[in-house]
Amino acid sequence: MPGDTTNATSGSRRNRWPQQQSPLAARPYDLRHAAVSLWLNAGVPATQVAEWAGHSVHVLLKVYAKCIEGQDDVARRRIGEALGLSEQDDSA
Image 1 (tube, rainbow, N blue to C red):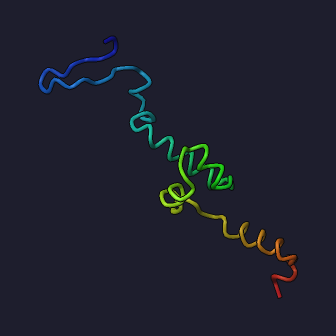
Image 2 (cartoon, rainbow, N blue to C red):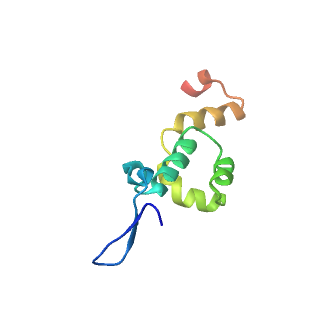
Image 3 (cartoon, rainbow, N blue to C red):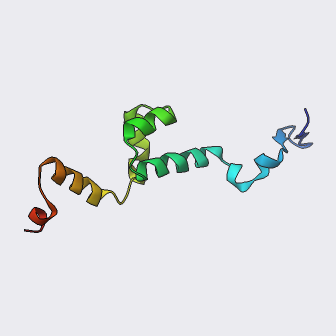
């Protein structure tokens, strides 16, 4: 097959396509993980990210919950807004 070489000692095949030699493509799953983490940290709802990633919400949060950071202030603000509290009420 074009682009393949056979290792003489082990007989294993390795791809030699240029895009697969890129350090970014060394582990394509890393790119997927980075994308899902970025979406979650950007505030995309977990239900939407799960659909895009082909996961259930349960699996998505089990795997990626530790990657979500820096959203505490936004979450607190949204809760306050849902309760009808203003920012002035929060400081008292």
